[in-house]
Image (cartoon, rainbow, N blue to C red; front, side, top):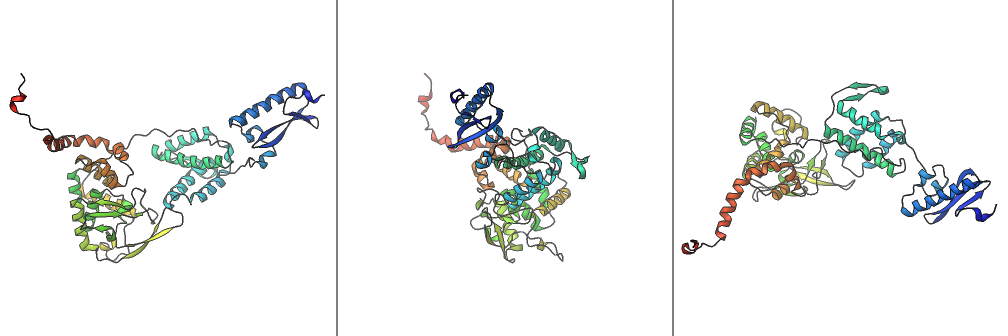
Length: 430
């Protein structure tokens, strides 16, 4: 058979057909394993043309087109596989360098819950989108996977929790796809479940007055007054030290955050780090009263983890609030744990006879009270540690209309004098 009868890029190799083409600047050959016939030569020519076109358009997937090719190893494209359990272990280990210890702890918790549901010993390439959708349904309706795959009914999780679980596992499978264990993540096209917007439920001024009166000691009253009138996060609140306070200037600088793991880190966001809070008078009064209790306390040198992996800094801290002040004869730490605030809050709420809300509502109370008083949303965002006022608008927008009347009165007071008076004779319409 003459050489001219072969389509471009098609040739005979040991009695069977193979094609050649340029890939990443190199000539490669792929044996098709079909006999050399006129019909097969035509089909081989069409295949070669489609491969060249896909390479030119940037859509060529070598591993999909030629999964058994020896050239995959040559270009680092060989198909790899790994079990779900091994993938989770590898992914979590590498994540340690990217995220905080507190976030890593949450990831580990999600993985511990999800891997038994998916199957730790199965290959990641066998996991399908359909399975992940049914798994999401199980999380919502409530099933727990026991040993040997047995499932028992339990209380279902909320939509935000399910979305967080799925997003975390999606990151793990995306890692698998990026490193050649998968051609595509089974969660890549699964959208988050729709959830209702959480509505802030702040304390009213009357409720907070009753709450303050129900506090059993001065420190508790000062602590919650500062929380409500500054809007700091609770991890930041228990980390506050007198070294961060300037009562003369009326400012408070937020430099640290205490995690649920008991580690000091920088505040949650870059915008919230070393932010200066301008104290309202009730907050200043609470600090003046607290100074009599703890200002002359012992100073501790605390290790604070920075955002860069492995780096720490030391902060001298004479803590504003300490359990040692009220827990006589009981061994306690020199600062409160984050979880202790929720326990204290619940106890005071019961004594005050107030409808229960979570302790985090102190932050929402600050924002809503400030907006109702007519404060600038950008100023509120800065005080709360947000990077922009967008969060304030999206979360607390419903409280802004309450201050409209006050805003109009303020504008009338400041802008009325900008219009020169008109002589009475000229104001008469003729």
